[in-house]
Structures are given as C-alpha cells and as structure tokens.
Amino acid sequence: TFAEWTVCNVAAIDAKTSADDRLAVLAAARAGGIDAIVLAQSVGMKLDLGDGPSEYALVACDEVHNSTNPKNKAFEWFENEVKPRAHVMLGLTGTPTANYNNELHSLLHLFTHADVGTSKDFAKEFVKPVEKSRSKRADRDARALGAEKRDK
Image (tube, rainbow, N blue to C red; front, side, top):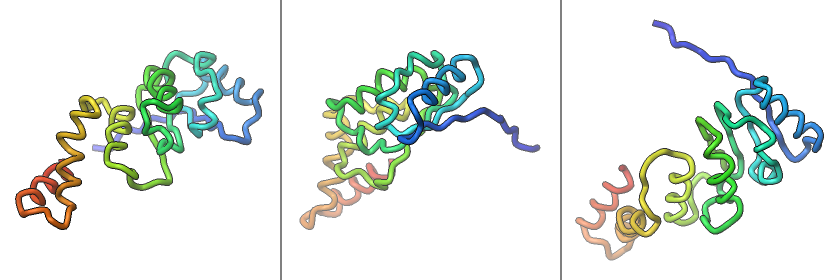
C-alpha cells in the first residue's frame, strides 16, 4: 500500500514579516486558508494568536530552547497560547541538547502529551539517576540505572 499524503497550506512568520503581513496571515488562517503556521518564538510572543483560528493543524516554533523555564514568558506563551490551539506542536532549536537535564522536563511537558509529572518527580525519577551515573565515583549499579533512565 502507498502512504497517504495530506497537503496543507503553511505560512511562516519571522522577524522580517511586517505587522500588516502578520495580521494578514492570522486572518487567512482564521478564514481557513492556512492549516499550519511556522514562527520564531520571539516573534510569536508578540502575536495575538486569538486573532487567528481557534485551532491549527500544526504550529512549528523555532528557538524553543528559550522556553525551558516554567517561570518565563516564553514558557507561559507556549503553555497558554500555543498548546491549546495546536493539534501538533513542533519545537525547533539550534541547541541540540539541554544545558541542564531538568530542562528536558519543560520541553517534554510542552511538546508531548506524555505525563511527565512534576519537575520534582521528573528530577527524582530521571535527572538524579542519570547525573549520578555520570559521576567518576558511580558504581556499576548506578551506571546501569542511569543508562536505563536515559534510554527510557
């Protein structure tokens, strides 16, 4: 059998997109002419996504490495403005790995439907065993547990 392909209309908004063009993209999306939107997080935070449709098939955001702190505005924007409107969220970043293991909790919370628990529970279950396994003094059991948690 052949895979089925869905064709959708995609719009991109970046720092060079004029204010009028940004509003036009949201208006076109509201009218059903755009299914997916690609934007830089710093630009997206300046948009009122309420000017667009109540749902997007896909929202792809760049610079998500700036959204790992639940207390910052970028995280709140993703949590409150993007996540409720997007059937699928795609996070893009030029930072290939988290600077701190607990940043992974924030990204998993925002971009998956997985129940990752609280950041404290996540740290206890995953971060601490992985960090302990990387210690020069880690014994065989600690290294095995850390590898198991990393692979999960």
